Image (tube, rainbow, N blue to C red):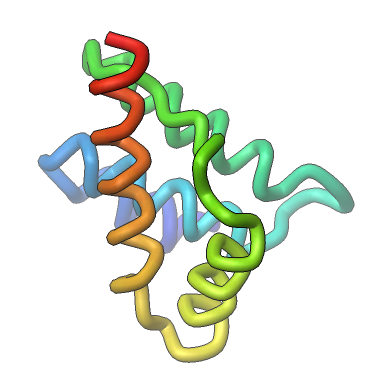
Amino acid sequence: MGYRSGLINTKNNVFEQALLALVLISYIQPFVDGNKRTARMVSNAILINHNFCPISFRTVDSVDYKKAMLLFYEQNNITSFKKTFIEQYEFAVKTYF
């Protein structure tokens, strides 16, 4: 994970760090179970550490979420997941804060 975590740490933008942590931890599957949940917690920890609100992903259709992740896994295309990430952050800000 050294190369991938190094990639996250080179980013100056907090949202980019959080997004990369989310997709990369999910991608490398470091645990037997709970990889996506762990990735969401780490991503939120990055946001919270920089005084931004966390994201819950409550309004995302589970099929759309999985499709976006599969697109990243199989084609290294983060576009769809980035869109979901942005939409969910905007929803969290408007709804909870």
